[in-house]
Structures are given as C-alpha cells and as structure tokens.
Image 1 (cartoon, rainbow, N blue to C red):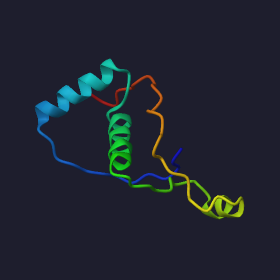
Image 2: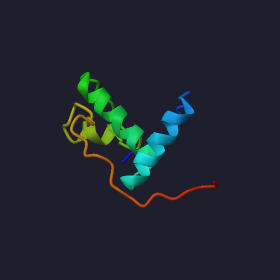
Image 3: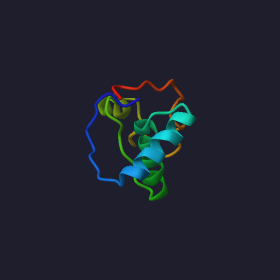
Amino acid sequence: MEQKTARLTLLIDPNKKAAFERLCAQQDLTASQVIRHLIRDYLAQHGVEYVPSGVDTDKAEASGNESAPSRRNAAPPAKRRATRRGA
C-alpha cells in the first residue's frame, strides 16, 4: 500500500460531481478510492509501471528482483464505510 500521498486537484461540473459522490456512497466507497482505482487501471492499460511509495527499492534489488514491483494487476480498493466530513 502506498504510504505517501500527493494532492490532485481537478475541476468538474458540480452536477456530475454530486452524481459521482452519490454512486460512490451507494457502493460504500469514497470518491478518492474510486479515482485511485481508475488511475491504477489507466496506467496498467497503457503499460505504465511504477514503484508505489513505501516500497524499498534497495531491498527489492538485493533480493534479486531487479524489476521494481508493478501495480499492473492490483486488486481494487477494499470497501470501507464512507464517512461524511461536514455537510
């Protein structure tokens, strides 16, 4: 699991955002979880590999695994109970 985070800011139609957030809530997922999953799928679809934050690349190389771990076949995010912050 990634340990560091970076913020991604985007502009979206307010009605589309509200519909997206409702759908996420119905699926017991946060919008962030769904967007992270979409990004992982998009990277995999285009063959882009990366090393998730928190993975020690020195240990991976020392164990004989020259290629860094990829997220190509990552499982979808675990479902968790959504919490609302403010209204």
